[in-house]
Image (cartoon, rainbow, N blue to C red):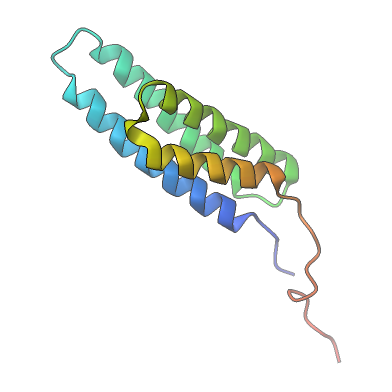
Length: 117
């Protein structure tokens, strides 16, 4: 039997995390000459790691793991939105995927089951 996973939430959240990762790294590299470069780089690493960790947890059929991953995605999105709304596309995707993951619950889908004759 096929496992039921939050595919839409995972796809949206992972796409948002990829946007965030690229844009945060670009922002960190862009201020390389400034004093706050190490802080930006540390924040970028935290955001990227939370996004990856959340996406890995969301790729599960266990509701507890999916919710933990969704919360990690939401925290990552909140952190990235605090540093600037220039990453609004990634933040919105991560918010949407995170909330979809929190609301997801595994159900038995009769269309997945095979009929036995």
